[in-house]
Image 1 (cartoon, one colour):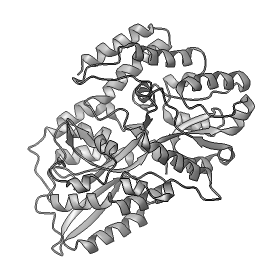
Image 2: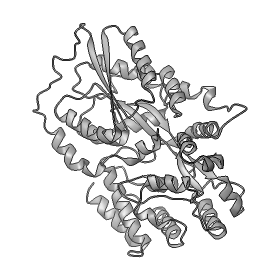
Image 3: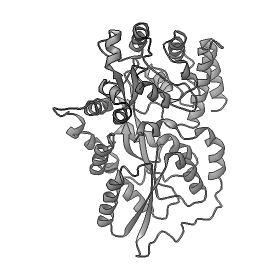
Image 4: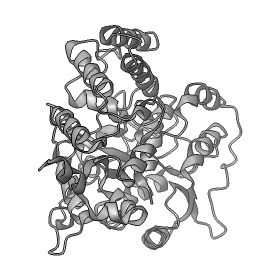
Length: 434
């Protein structure tokens, strides 16, 4: 399964401002869940929605649910798996009609948009200190907004640099770049020696936030404590200048202006780029889709800036505040995300757990004697969790911030604006919204 694709797409964020404000404001809609949370056997039903986890993990969840029900005989779990492309529409409609499931698998970026409208159960007074301490502190923060917790962390990925050793060899490169400064040097060497590109990083406003995250890695503060633009600084201008220079010097494909992260994957699998920034789990897809490229692929730590910061993508579980089974919903969400169940799911899905003890398992720190590229990437990915954080935390209108930055960065890349003007215009555009 293409996990990286699920996280990267963002799922129609451009519509959120209007749709969310309309749907969630429809508070007079009748609650069709009322009186229906009890099954024929007298058990309380917990409706659990996941995002595109069937059929790969049907067996895992069936076993997990059966064990939960055995240990908690007063509850019955009904599992519904929703295609990723349908999740936002379905959960928005369900929340507005007060028919939402009791536990929902989302990501903090989208979930925070509904958290702004008080759609989720606040967990700070519901989750004990001992339970809270099970999770990685930096990851727990990903599901908070205005110092209020709206979700439980679940599974994680952190990018690694997957690179084509054949292209590196042809270009005379002996080790992968560790920083963006090194990437610029490597990119020129690869282009000069092979005619290929080193890297693809989209600046399409509705797609990947990787470039905006690179600003943070380069030491740029995106917004201040009041939510106003904080990137109109020498550091912010330097970050803009970096990507403008990469584009104008012909070291990025021209499609970075029009194509999304999916194109980065296609280019790497065709052998047209040397480096793919992606989750370690994606190596399985490369093996299936481009076995020749997979054989030439190796992994290195994520490319970062002078801060040394690494990104992490988080999936979480949220509980609608209008659930009819609040106690059971929280108990089940904590059960899904406990050490034992997270460790097993992480192994099955080739992702990372969000609990401290599960991440300490030797599976994430040692490789077998016959280690595959996937094994190597997993250990690199897990080791990065020491420095990993959600680089762009949940905030109001975060996709509009990305649009303001990317649209002006594009203008600078095309020579329509100077870097100074592009940064200034992006800051003004954001401040008019915040």
